[in-house]
Image (tube, rainbow, N blue to C red; front, side, top):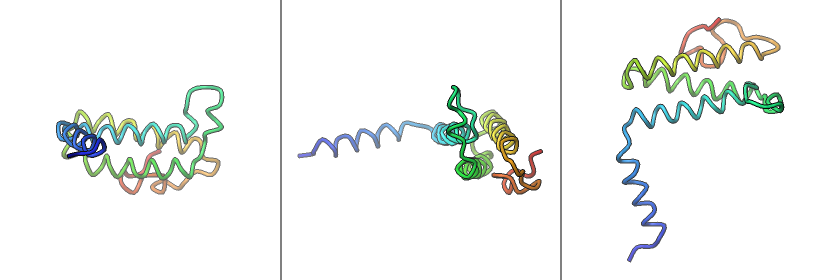
Length: 117
């Protein structure tokens, strides 16, 4: 006899088994992008600046850069190009929001992407 939680876990496993790796990777990247955008103060609304947290944004952008760089050969140019564009936009937004900008090559994720200026 299986419990409801065991049935739900089995359903979730079957559901994720049907999802292509490229979808899982791009979904994770989009979540990282969205969170980083909010932490860079790019959220919509009058209270966007209240969410500004560049320390958190740096971590999210670096994780995104690592994911995009590592997965690019496997997810194809079409997906990788749009993720790289979004990543670059976030790196530039971070640089713009910083009171004291990082040296070229020291910005978030730049150890994976190269300098963004």
